[in-house]
Structures are given as C-alpha cells and as structure tokens.
Length: 179
Ligand SMILES: Cc1cn([C@H]2C[C@H](O)[C@@H](COP(=O)(O)OP(=O)(O)O[C@H]3O[C@H](C)C(=O)[C@H](O)[C@H]3O)O2)c(=O)[nH]c1=O
Image 1 (cartoon, rainbow, N blue to C red):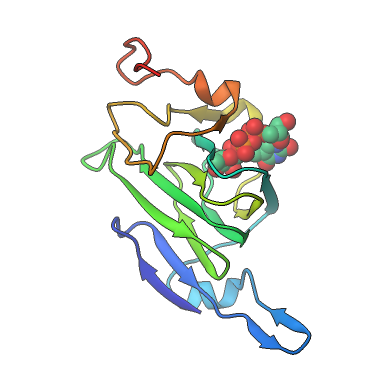
Image 2 (cartoon, rainbow, N blue to C red):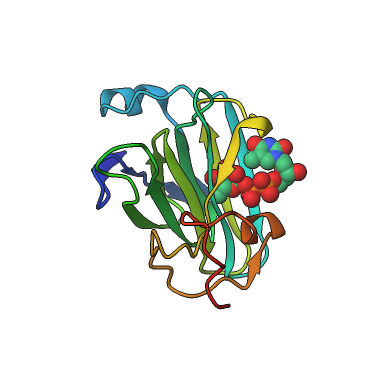
C-alpha cells in the first residue's frame, strides 16, 4: 500500500496492487492496520457500493453535518471516476476543492467536514465506500456541483444527476447558473 497526498494535504490517496495470477487477481481493499501505520487512523462501520450505469453520472456534493460527520475511503471497483473533495469546514480553507481520478487500485480518503462527489468517466463504474460513521439521513447536507462559489473544475457536465443533487441550494442563494 502506498500513501500520498492530493493537492489538498488533508485528502490522502491510497494505492494498492492486485496480486495477479492465471486465475485472475486478488486485492486488499481496506486494511485498518496499514492505514494506521501510514498515519490514517480509520475504523469503518459501514461499507457501501455505488453502481453507475453510464459515463457522465454525477453524484454529490454530499456530507453529513456534525456530529455525524464521516471520514470516507472511496475506491473504484470498476471503471474510472473524477472524484472531488470540497472543504466546507469553517476556516481559511473553506471552499477549496481537489480532484483525484479513481480507478481500480486507487482510493481516496476524505476527512469529516468535506463534501464528496464524483463524475463517472466510463460506463459501468462501481465505487466502494467505507465510512467511519453510520449513514444518518437526518444529518445529510449537500451543495451544488456547479455552484460558482466553489467553481469545481469538472471535466464535463453531468449526463445523469438525481433531482436531489440538481436542487441543492447555491451558496449565495442566487438563481441557478444557466444550464
Ligand atoms: C448514502 C446512502 C444512501 N442510502 C439510500 C438512500 C436512497 O434511497 C438510496 C440512494 O441514496 P442517494 O441518492 O443519497 O445516493 P448517492 O447520491 O449515491 O449518495 C452518496 O453519494 C455521495 C457522492 C456520497 O459521498 C455519499 O456516500 C452518499 O451521499 O440509497 C442508504 O440506504 N444508505 C446510505 O448510506
């Protein structure tokens, strides 16, 4: 397992190699001990799978409000995704974002207080999430993927977006940007 830091040092990139043989491959997806040894203490309590039929599917930007914040370890089981972490913690870093391209073997660890979202880059992209806090529907919050206040540099506009994600409020309360 190799750990590096994304453009924002709070966001870690974890890369692992699958062991290949004539039958196929074997890969460890989460290792609490190795993460702790790398300075990334993490105790997952839920593991979820996100299946996305088409390239251009955008989910986000989501987070859970305190005290239900989640640290998320997100990785691609299949396909590729442009994965974004957006710092929404009060303070000098508010509004900073960074992106990591996820593919099998590359995971990103996104701390509490950051909104998370992704845009799939291939059809049939599947992501696995491990989170250290249970899903708490009443604590869910979201910001718009295209909010000019954050100006996230998505590679292309989404082709699939949930009504909920289309309806998150803009930070300054202005009208929605032109479609
Ligand atoms: C997150 C979650 C959802 N659900 C149910 C709720 C809905 O009936 C259905 C789809 O939920 P939602 O549309 O919120 O799923 P996503 O848009 O993929 O949300 C996720 O995508 C962004 C990018 C994230 O970072 C979060 O992990 C999460 O918010 O699954 C559950 O039953 N358990 C869960 O943990």
